[in-house]
Amino acid sequence: MFNLLKKRGALFISLSNAVSQLGDRLTYMVIVTLIGIMSPGQMTAYSEFSITFTLPVILLSPFVGVIIDHSNKRQVILRCHLMQSILIFPTPTHCSAPRLSHLIAHYRGQYH
Image (cartoon, rainbow, N blue to C red; front, side, top):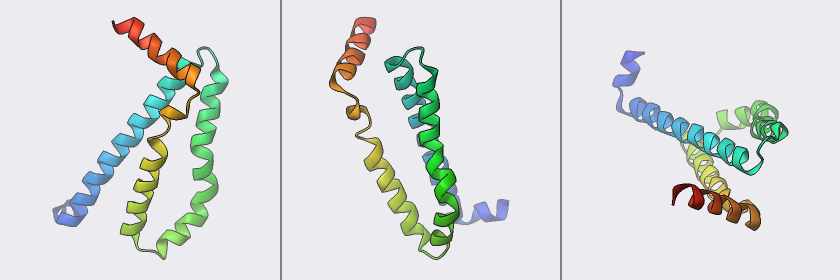
């Protein structure tokens, strides 16, 4: 394993994957926090988010794995991260305007 990490390309992919995983986990924590603030006391909101987050992985993994095995993996990784970024950036603005303004007012009152 250590011989593999001596190769510059493998080390770069390992480090970039670690940074990507950190970003994914931070995004997950932010979304869970938003759910907690916008839907206090509703445990079904957490369940719906978890199902929405994991169901595509469970359903698509067997099929997408075969497609990726026959594709250029570098291009697949690049495109997946690009699509993920495009989907994540509008997430906060997708909330309805009253809830978003309520969230902003909540934080302004708490920190000012």
